Image (cartoon, rainbow over all chains, first blue to last red; front, top):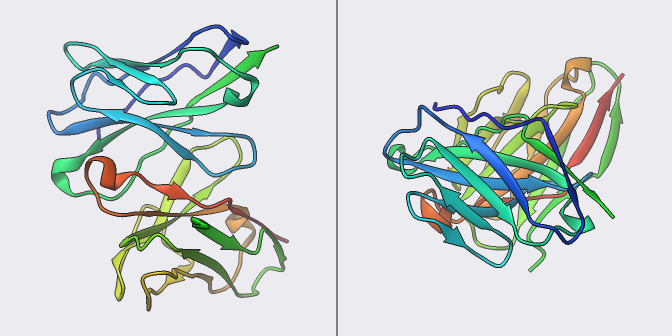
Length: 112
Length: 115
């Protein structure tokens, strides 16, 4: 499976934008980029996913590099409730694989 | 919808005891799975099911059994608990595999301690 690399931790001030980077230099053509987050003492929750084009939803935006070797999750205005571990995951939709391979993710701290 | 529910929330076992972790979903999802999360680590897949009567092994299946007799329920059985199975266990479900249908919904977790 193609791997992802994320910073261990990041900090942001409340109400400021946050850019969470993810490197995936060995991504294949059928790999989708998924982001999940895990709030303290909770199960992971889906944030966003994309293939080639930038994507937006009510939670966040996903910016994907033109060569697809990196991507950035953008939280437009961080709130205290966004403090969580964010996981960048590659998923091969073409292979029909069920497994989500979680790394250690990026722990985001939001400063009031 | 209640989503994905798990019981119990907490459990303490002695080495060698057996128990079943319960997982249920009310979203009519075909795909269900069990993950474990050790402290400071990401989640690892234990077993998964692609529909009633069909199960398969994930990354770390040893010491665990599963069955799927209904679409809604996917229990995880620990046959003979060991301290190495101390972990937080998450159940997840999804409608399908690809695209938005592959979005996995997770339960709140069961914190298991094996003494």
